[in-house]
Amino acid sequence: MNFKTAALSSLALIAFAGNSVLCRLALSNGEIDAASFTAIRLVAGAVALLFLLKLNGSVEVKSVALSGRPRNLAWASSLMLFAYAALFSFAYVSLETGVGALILFGSVQITMVLINLFKGNRLSLFEWLGLLISCSGLVYLVFPELSKPSLIGFLMMSVSGIAWGVYTVLGQGSENPLVDTTSNFTLSLAFVALLLLPFLVFPFASGLHASPQTWFLAIASGALTSGLGYAIWYAALPQLTSTQAGVMQLLVPIIASLGGVLFANEVLSSRLIIASLLTLGGILLVLLAKRAPLQIAKP
View (cartoon, rainbow, N blue to C red):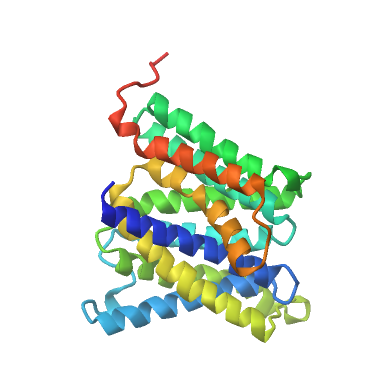
């Protein structure tokens, strides 16, 4: 992995962690419902990215919709983006933060590994070992908070993780990350409209609500940590294998926890330090695995 890829990946992961913090702040106190948060987030992301393209001037905004990609790929990417964002929001209504993070990133990791194996790419011994060590670090971090999760919340967060894993794989062939990400956000608004339709048709039972503070959090989540963060992630993906991309995302809960220490006056516990070392060590093994010739033999 070269310096540019490492820098882009690091920025993207920081954005993902920041996005988790913004989502938790907005949804935890009930001042905004999950549907409204999802809608504001995706609309803000689309508007911010379209504005950037307009400033750049290299691409006509009116030609962004499919961004030169096959129609099925463009719509599949936007559907996965919407599914991830919507299910993530709804799941966190009934899940604790630690449980939700474990389910989400565990699902992402499993999805990426399975896709990698389906493509015929065998994992080396060191990749399997690094994967195991990274997952153990994440489990160790959230284990004190684990409790029996809501079945509906568990299922929604699992599918959200699967959707993000597929979205990541679809982005590995992106030749123009900013344009493709803008296209994904723009097309996802069609699914947002479908999400909001029942609430608009039956306003008496809508439950749509948002305070000024949560509007700000949702807009920041969409425009900054989602829109820009995902564009940066798309720029890094062509240089990462599916396994590397999946394992690296296990860093997000660690970064988010460290963000809590820096910005929310949370305690830097020995558990966090040990979990961070385990996760970072596992990721290092996966990233260096190409230099190791040992592989799991076929049965």
